[in-house]
Length: 343
Length: 292
Image 1 (tube, rainbow over the protein chains, first blue to last red):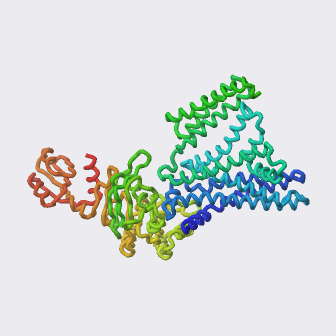
Image 2: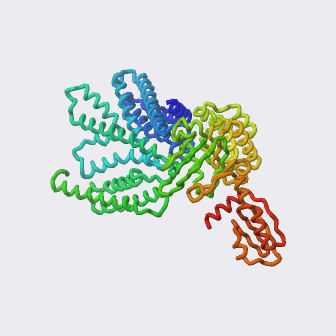
Image 3: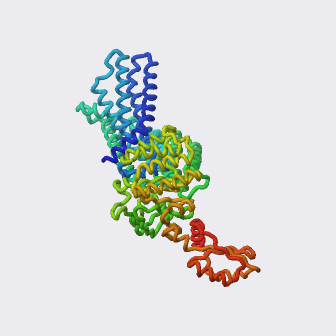
């Protein structure tokens, strides 16, 4: 444990400044937004703003914490220290979680105090605030685990940042495409919100749970299932994170990120989202055009991934998957339309 | 003592090292030589525990694996291009290593910095490559590890700094009983202070032993003939290398010096001079002979 403690302390000393700057910048931007808002009735939005800070923190802090691991020289130096790889992996994950908890708690508490003094009336009960903060922290920890996995999946820093940001955006885009397209017309839009801001649903769970009469509404079940999925996914990805971390090899770091869950899947899914974007508008011409642009996007994506215009046979599979999935979507849509499920 | 047994390591699909067998005695200064891509850095990374071998074992003192944290406390690996951040100074790097190597000697570090003329408060990013290497060498020597692994140790050092470095390694190796494994392409430098060498070629240890013995195994002669001598006659000799320029011949032979000399005298040269060999030439001959 001594070596873990030393390593952890060393990482705190090397990285504390950037999270502090990010937290302070976010914090002051929220305060500024509150400050210029003269209408006290608008102030309840402050909570949403603080949650935005938390989302920023749990996206950026894993990247900062793992930055040195995706650099060839830094990783070589860190891996040659008398500390095992498992302890190094634990230290980096823990560091991003701790930064997120500290930043969340500080932002939440200080901004709440500020709003409370500005409003001159009780804006929310302290109990609600505590639960709200706790919910945000739990979701923040889940995101830290997911983003740590995504950054470690990459072999270099740029790819790591692309993976983290793209996989934050894509799930909601897929849901968007599905909701606006063929499936899920009867599924409430809140699922979309849920993927963006799961902590809102966590709070909802809490309030539904303490009110037994309302506990088993459809919304509650949606919320519970989605939150359960988020937690399950974050636990699975945390295990994968340790597995990938232990297999990290210096000679691969700095090179192309070859994981199937990296660029290949990302490019195919993005292409599908672009292609599916137009389908609900009902224009076949537009459908074909969007599919064409989706394929162009995939080709460009593969070139960016390979850092070369010369593509490999595996890339053709990535590109070819888009029209296959797209026509599968169309087929399902036609079947469902004939069954009278949608539209 | 370091014992390497049947070591194999591949990077993706390329086998870099295989069937590596080597024993490095305590207190030895070992030079690791080989052409580019021979696997010197890979072997050092395996010894430092940065890589885990695919097959085989590396044992420190007969029992300890470099993947073990306790073993690694006795090892210091200085990579070819060690990492530093934008804000890093000599002092901050020293403090970082102090956490992991509590026995690091502050006095040695600061006295070496003074000798090298380095300011510990200046950001490392403002240092030249040679200055950075001097800083890390100062850290390595201040740590006084039992096993010191240096990759491309002389890279970026000026001749004076190289001499200082050689003297320091010799001094610390003698006084602190440090075992040093040093990879370098500066074979003249290695010849001056290494006890023994290992030649890596074709994924394995091609040759190893005492540097002085290897150099004395080879003898080089320069010959001049009254007339051009048929090449077949020269090729029939047990030569390691042969250079023919008209009536002048330069030949390197392996084996007993007197025997080689008598064989050459049979060709009746008008002039025959023995020239001194060095480790770099021996290395070139060894590598070229393997290719042929």
